[in-house]
Length: 115
Image (cartoon, rainbow, N blue to C red; front, side, top):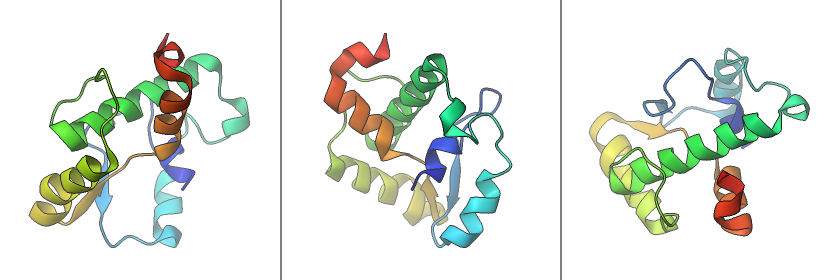
């Protein structure tokens, strides 16, 4: 879902960004509309993409490993699922916001995308 790319800003903590597990797309889109930094992805700069990619990689590591930092390698999908269940869904009924697109870019281009 492209909305997850837009669900972050330079001023709010993406580390704690989560939504109720049962939220529908119709409910999620207006929620994301309140975040204005990246609403028009056609206007996102290279520096913005760096920020988006790094934040999502750190968030993936938080979900999988419990630490909000850029890991040397991306976490495996199974660890992301397990982390979503153990850290978010089971204890509080939420799902951490995470976009797969930045993870794909990191996987495809390697670490050079982080420079």
